[in-house]
Image 1 (tube, rainbow, N blue to C red):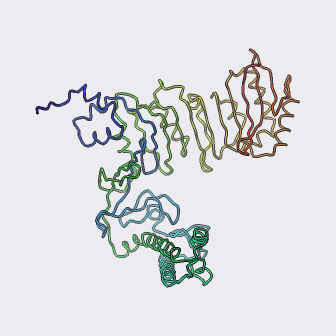
Image 2: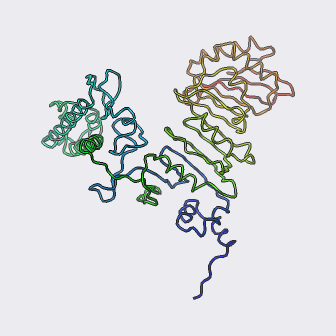
Image 3: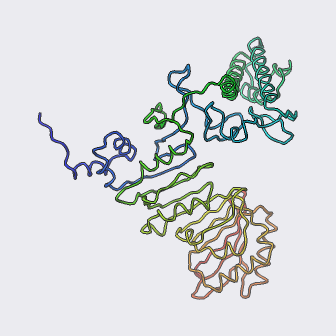
Length: 464
């Protein structure tokens, strides 16, 4: 049977109805279709960008550092996330030592008189001034864990089958650095629980050994061979490696390159229903030659910096967008780009940001939900001034601000009474105060609760 290659237009039609991830993979493998693929509009339901992954709908593209000259033929992943310290790690040095330790001159954390976890995620209050001393202490701690494993191997329970789940949780919660006492071992009531405890302990021993291995490499002058691997995984399907590149000391370059290949140099703005940025340690570079039409945007970290990156690439044809959700951490500067924020109909603000009159008064969004501490705002004259401002500028029907509060119901009654007494023309209602505005509208200030969580609501509604 004779076969003919697809015409350019036919190829574009097929690509248009193809899953975005299939398109991306095919484009990476078949360079001849790359021009056509980038010429076809790309629609993504959900895009998540994390510290070490990019998720497109249900498919995740991970990238990480692997040691390839080891016993494991498939390669050993140099853990990006340390399960013992709950700490993210970007890069490693030539021996495999985590970059934050290498930058500190190779000095191990902990044992320094400060409330700081050591390499095993434990607080050891003994002050040890030398790196060698701290390393020896960690080795002794590892040996204790191995002794604890031997205790478990030799433990013979009474095979009591009751309350197994609660007991095993209580047992694995024993975190001290000494061998088990008799009463602690007796928490394991049957063979099944002992097997779970052994599995848990062996896993912890392996994690400890992985933390110490780079320092053994340095002592023996062993320089492992590392590479960066990009893997693709889809739900419960086994991940597969789609790219290997030499590791040169900057893991995040792999993320930037992946972002560039997937989304840059397209003829049409990428249509994204929901975009979520989760990266905690690095902001993937969203490139200038990229355009996005975003409906729902969520920024969990580095809010101010991420807004600066996103502003030039957001296609104005998508304005107004549907929803923006931002979260401010304790260590972030509390800056809101009002010009950017106003392009979203709904705004949700969470985290550690102070609720002030300039902040709430300058927001132009139709609906705003403040999931932050706001009780002090309602106890100050600023709240009354804010209400007067809404009345003066005649906010349109449908404008609605919700403030979640952590107060008693009696406090809300007092707040509404204060509004009624200080605002001219205010009329008390059921859990509410109604304030007439021009053009047959009313500013309704009310309180209610949602699953035992109280909130104050300000809404402009038509006069009934």
